[in-house]
Length: 328
Image (tube, rainbow, N blue to C red):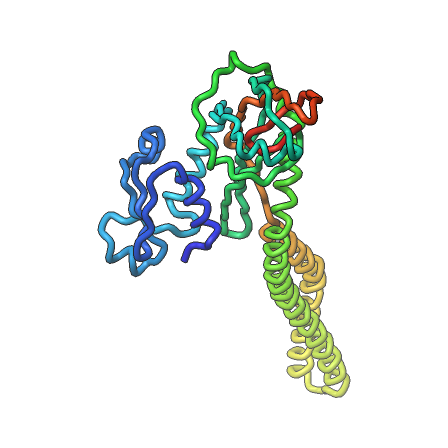
C-alpha cells in the first residue's frame, strides 16, 4: 500500500490537470505534453494504490513506494527546475475597500501605483534509509521575506511580462523558505529516526550477541585444550609402559600444538575486528539521508493602488493591496 504522503504528492503534482477519483482509481487527464514525453506514455493515466485493484483495472499504474511512475515524477521535477513569472489580474473591490476605511469616508480617486510581489518555492524532498525511499513535495509562499498562508490559486493569473517589473532578488526569500521547510520536516524526521534507532538497536544486539558467542566458543576451546594437556601430563606421570608413554607424549604434543595455534591466530582480535566492521556497516545502513531539491520558483506580481479619501473635509492618501484586501 502507498502512504498518504505519496498520494498527496501525486495530487499536488497533477493539481493543474484534470483529476477524477472514483472507486479507488485516480484518473488523470489533460497532462502537460512535456511530462507525457518524459514518462513515455500519453494520458489519461489510471493510478491505483492497491495490488488487487491493479489486477482488475486494465492499463492501470500501481503506485507503491519506489514505483516507476513515482520515480518518473521525481526525475521530471528535478530536471525541470525553473523560475516562472505570473501576473495576478485583480482590480480593487470597492465594497471590500470601503470596509477598510473609516465610517463616513468617501473615495475620491483610485489609480494604480506600482506592484507587490509574492514568491512561491517548490521543494521536492527525498528521504532515503535502509532500502526505503520516500518523497514529498512542499510549496512555501513568501511575501516581504515572511512565510504567509494564502490560497494563491483562488486568484486568476496569466504569464507575466518581465519588462513590467524591476529585477527581484530572491535570495533572502529562499533562505526564509528553507528555514520553513526544515521546520516542517522536523516531525517527519523525528518519526523516521525513532524507527531507525529501534531497528538499529535490534541489529546491533544481533551482531554483538553473535560475536559474544563466537568468542566464548573459542575461549572454551582454549580452556578445554589446556585442561586436556594438564590431564594428559598427570596421566603420563603414572604410566610405566613404553607404548602408553609414547601415545600420551604424542597426544600432549598435538594438544600443545593446537593450543599454540589457537593463540597465534589471535581469534579475539580477529573476531573483535569483524564485529566492529559489522557494527559500523549497520550504523551506516541506518543513517537517514535527506535531499531537498528546489524544483520551481514562481514569482507573482499584482498591482497596488493609490487612493485619495475624503473624511470630514480632510483629504488623505494611502495605498490599497487588493490581494490581501487591506490599506497599507
